[in-house]
Image (cartoon, rainbow, N blue to C red; front, side):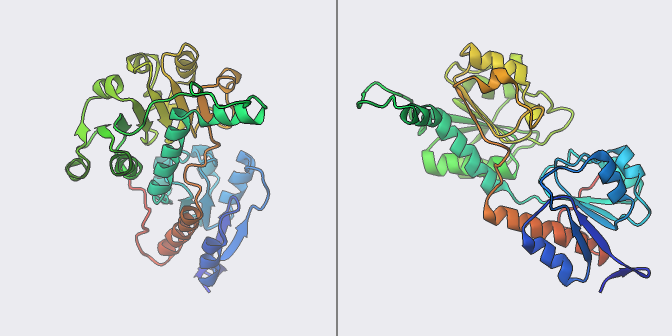
Length: 328
């Protein structure tokens, strides 16, 4: 059994996660409590939890701000975020209180696969064709129906070449022989050697690419990174894919671009005011939606649960967690 002073170490998990992570904590003797409801916790509930527990395993939908952290007792040692991103947590406020923040950076391949499923769904008009069949409109084979361009050989522009962006690039290069442009604050020479990729300005990428994927973290500089000015640079035949954070794209500008056919299509797994999506966007036929599930593979979700749990264990064992978020 693990104790903090004379009290057993307590961990609160704000939503149901794969059992592998919970079992890992229990095997260490930690006292674990889980929110088994299907509702997000309110700000008041989060404050109460933060005041009572030694560790809290959070979701990206849990907003952990200065006010929530102020409710924490001196017992709280770690916030283990069950996500790659951590923009839902005021990391600086946590640091001031001596609370470690961690994430689970393991979803690159899963998100890349999902990004490509959106690319193909948009390029091949899969959702439109599915609806056409389901509504009884398929009455004969039509050689001119649902024509689309080939994805193979086109140019993909990857904005944000982290773990996800690099995985997207490898699929594009190895699977479809696509030409690769990327935009990032850093240069990745190994990736360039493996995929013949080229680091370019955002202006050039937007102007040239046939498919544009977003895999950047949400920061002050990436908020509304894609707005009307950026959309105007894109080809009329371009496809925009967002598997990063919804706020990276100005949704009002995107509605304009899609409704006026300034760009051909968009594949969206994330939304600006999630889970609320503008009615105007929902009515457009040239958008494919998924409900923020890009990393939802069995393998990734289990791995995330194990890493989040291990991050908690490491803190209480005096080790540096794998997913620790470092702030200056």
